[in-house]
Length: 148
Image 1 (cartoon, rainbow, N blue to C red):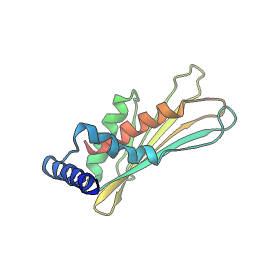
Image 2 (image 1 turned 120 degrees about the horizontal axis):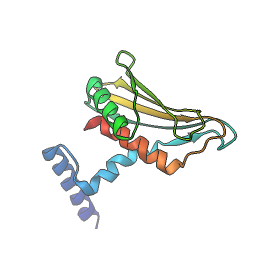
Image 3 (image 1 turned 60 degrees about the vertical axis):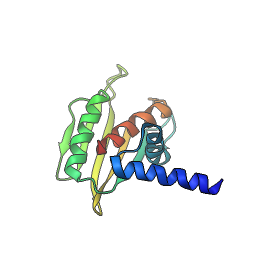
Image 4 (image 1 turned 90 degrees about the horizontal axis):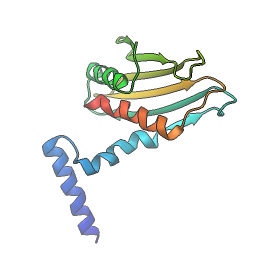
């Protein structure tokens, strides 16, 4: 059984090496890095809440990551995205509750060795709530898009 599993892993690595991308069924495993790094800080409806996650991309140039991250943020429905290329930061604010109290999404892409580390934080104000599973999925879609 061990040799069968090892052969499967070698086959996946060979496909990734040849094609540059994992097959569709393996992409969930790649994206799980972002999902595993997800944390929630704060207490719902009592304090401000921060939803955070991150992922590293070896050999990804920071300018490419920033361009792709901005496009992914727009695809998730954010607009008026501020870009500070020097700091490697993208920031946007949205107001969806009708309360006039905005939520903030901040994404950073920082050089890490020969690649780029992408961090994201979605911040909501005291009294506001958000489904952590939905936020996790949306943040990871944005972060994973850095390497498209």
